[in-house]
Each structure stands twice: as structure tokens, then as C-alpha cells.
Image 1 (cartoon, each protein chain N blue to C red):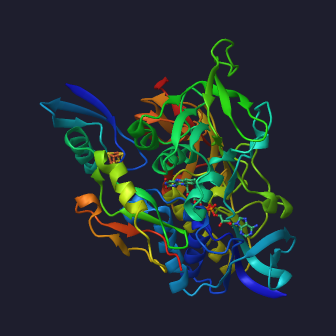
Image 2: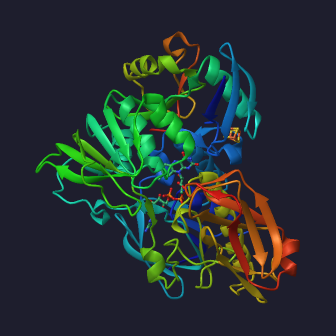
Length: 116
Length: 422
Ligand SMILES: Cc1cc2nc3c(=O)[nH]c(=O)nc-3n(C[C@H](O)[C@H](O)[C@H](O)COP(=O)(O)OP(=O)(O)OC[C@H]3O[C@@H](n4cnc5c(N)ncnc54)[C@H](O)[C@@H]3O)c2cc1C
Ligand code: SF4
């Protein structure tokens, strides 16, 4: 089976053509770099995404955060809920860890904007 | 009157990179002016990732990308003043500013870099009939509300225009628990990046309705819903195709306009095609010593290109100051857009003075598959690049070698050749 994907690795958005055999990508073409090949492989077997959102401080100020690595696509809303339920303490600095392992994924949630 | 070698107007990524570059090229006496309460520009509200892949070889969020340049500016010891808005730039490079504590003040500079960024097309400029009820926002305003103020504007959303901010906000509102019913786009193609369509719409099953528009807004005080219709090839709504969407929020993502009131007052010539200043390869405007870079020059989709362009502007300004304010002498050739190309930046090149490669940045007018981008000087071909797909939403960047330019006699043209128009 052949599947057409658009790489989300960078804003170039390369159009990828993937040969899939029993749920696994066996060959990838159309990518400009290695990221595209890796993206196609994981997109076919276990799609993941980086989440960017905000967490609120005790006085309800939003602080930008992200998952430090991609998390399984199916767990995005579960992760968002945990982030929303966590209060962030101020001041917050880029790289501060808000959650060590979000929803047991092993992926930390880190601060992406300095808020004093 | 306070006097400086270089004043940079705007503390977004363009202004920061320009200032850092000028400093590294030997200009010591610099001042950055920013009207907001902090540096970083529009990136502070762009909390999604996808910035900096070219510059830093890693994927950063907007505030993280901005922070790297803010750190550089601080490390280089470049002074900046926030909460300071530039009101006017007049002859002799006099910059009039207003600041809450100090009031109105005039500053003078040998060179000025314009880096004011752009603003969103206001909703009044859109041709939607009906009232203007509460619940209609530009996508960027909504982004600011959600990401910087922690306020989510609504629960049921329709987005008009498929620019990147609209796509990003479709996902952002979904994350905040809102239901995004549709993204409606007048053109037969999206004006946003493909990756954003995949990861902001497709991932969440949000429909993208191409060749559609909003024809009616319902609700007097508060928005109750919008009527969407299909349009024909002349972008005229087709009767009988109307569909009503109940919603309390309509976001408008209908494009950005360079912010050039100041440039105009400074006597800078503006391009009708880009809405930004007309510049040469030094990014210098028609006014000697006034340079421009970033979104104020032409609307960018990639901040990496903004930083690269700004570095060149900073370098040029530093050289201008070293030459004690004289323009490069010698031969100038024009650069113009031809078949399939909407505009070019720069629009002229000082060929005799060019000792470095020149980037020509531009946008195409339609979607082309398998076409080539060709730069010619008269009949002579200087550069040809084969492409797989060209879309208007992605800025193109061709590099002309200094050696090739030194030989060029006739004006340059940039065009799309061959391939199929999709
Ligand atoms: C919503 C949105 C999403 C984007 N997403 C991406 C993305 O995913 N990836 C990517 O690579 N790029 C993205 N971009 C593009 C990138 O962020 C911009 O191209 C970049 O921020 C432009 O930088 P700039 O410095 O030219 O403008 P800005 O960031 O707008 O900075 C201009 C600054 O000038 C200040 N200013 C204006 N007028 C005055 C005045 N009169 N006096 C004093 N100061 C003034 C403003 O306050 C502002 O701080 C996005 C842009 C937007 C708007
Ligand atoms: S394949 Fe590489 S260049 Fe192409 S979109 Fe993916 S990351 Fe970008």
C-alpha cells in the first residue's frame, strides 16, 4: 500500500510517498532530509506530536510550556488535562520543568517563556 | 537632543538581529526602541513550535527563539528602551519618541533601521455585510488573549482565512476546549504552510473549506452564527450553496500588512506590491541611512529569513556609518518580477560594490509543479533552480553569487518557467 504524507518536520512541508507493508513503512521518498524519513516511519506505526500550550500560575497568568519531546498523538488531550491541572510557580524561566513525566510518557513538560 | 550612531525601531526578531549584527560589525553607539513592555515582538505570543530550524538546527517555540536574540543583545551590551513608541521620523534622521516617564523627546541618529513588523488586516477592511457583534476578532488578537492574557474568547468557532495564524489558532482553541467548526478560505488553496494544515486541522478533524467565504454574520449584540457559501472562479458567492454555522466566535485570518506609517513620514518610497519600502541589496531605502528588514519590509512566514535579512541590514548600516554617511557609488541595476513572480526584495543591486552574495527573496503568484526559477540579466541566464512545488504561501530565497553579479550589465528579472500551474 502507498500512502501520501506531508512532512511536518519543518516549514518546507515535503510531500512524502511511503510504501507500507503490514503497518510498517518500508520505503520513503520525497523527503529532503533524514527528519522526513523518520517522521514517515513513526507516522505510520506510532504517530507522535510535540504539545505547546500554556499552564496557569496561582494568579491565573498564562506561562507558555511544551513537551520536551513528541508524545503519542492519542494522548494529546490527556496530557493537556494534566498540564491544565498543574499550577505553575512564578517566576518561571525557559527550561524549568513543570511535570517530570506527563501522563507516564516519560516526557517532561518544560517552560518556554520567561515570566517574572 | 540625544544622539546615536544607530537607532533601531522595533525590538522584534528583526530589530534584535539587526542591532546585534551592527554591533559585531563595529557600531558601538546603538539604541533599540520598542513600544511594548518587553523585547521579542510578535514571537512572544507565538507559543507554538517550528521556529529556528535553519538558524539553530532545532525546533523552538516563538518565545524561545526570541529569547536567544534578547540574550545576544544583552550580552553585547546594546542599550534598549521599552514602553517607548516612535511617533515620527523626520528629515535629518530625527526620531520623535513618546515614553510614559520621559514624555515626548527627539533623538538623532546617523543611521536608522526600520523593524516595526506588520499588523493584521483589520476587520473593517473585509467585505462582510451585517453588524459587527461581539465575538469577531482577528486571529492574532485571539492569540494574544489566549497566550498572553489567559482569556479564551469563545466555545464554538469559525475561522475565516487560512493564513498560518488562523491555522495555529484552530488548534490552540481546540486545546482550550473550544469546538472549531470550520476554516473557510476564499481561494482554491490555503495561504498557510502545509505542515500547519496537517498538524493543526487534519489532526483534529477540522474541515478546511477552500473556495468558500462568509457571506453573512448573524447576531446584533453577540455573534450567533455565520453563513458560509461556495464561490465561483471569480470569487463570487454561488447562490444556493449557503450553509449556516452556529458559533459565538469568528476569527479573521486574512493576511498581514507591513506597518509603514513611520516609513512614510520619513519620506521612504514604498512598494505597491509588498506594502513595504523599496530597497537595494544593502536593504537601504531611497532615504540615505535608512534601512529596513523583517516584516516591515515584506511579510515573512519564516522567522529564520527575518533574522538573516536583519543581519544584512545591521551590517549595511554599520558600513554606512563607517563611510561616514555616504551611499555606495557606482553602477546600479534593477531587479524586477516577471512571469509568475509577484515581487522581489531587493529591487536594485549596487553591482560595482557587491563583494558578497545577494539574496533575492520573493513570492510566486500561484501554485506551480515541477517549474524552474530563473534569474536573467537581459538575455543572459544567471541562475536556474528546479523546484518540485511552488506555492504563494512560501517565500522563496535565491542566492546570487557576487562573482556572477559583477559581470551583470542589464537589469535582472526573476521568473517561473515551465512546469504546470496547478
Ligand atoms: C501569528 C504568527 C505566527 C507565526 N508563525 C511562525 C512560525 O510558525 N514559524 C516561523 O518561522 N515564523 C512564524 N511567523 C513569522 C515570524 O514570527 C515573523 O516573521 C517575525 O516575528 C517578524 O519579525 P519582525 O521583527 O519583523 O516583526 P515583529 O515580531 O512584529 O516585531 C516588530 C516590533 O516592532 C515594534 N514596533 C512597531 N512599531 C513601533 C513603533 N512605532 N515604535 C516602537 N516599536 C514599534 C512592535 O511592538 C514589535 O515588537 C509567525 C508570525 C505571526 C504573526
Ligand atoms: S523532509 Fe526534511 S526538509 Fe522536508 S519538510 Fe521534513 S524536515 Fe523539512
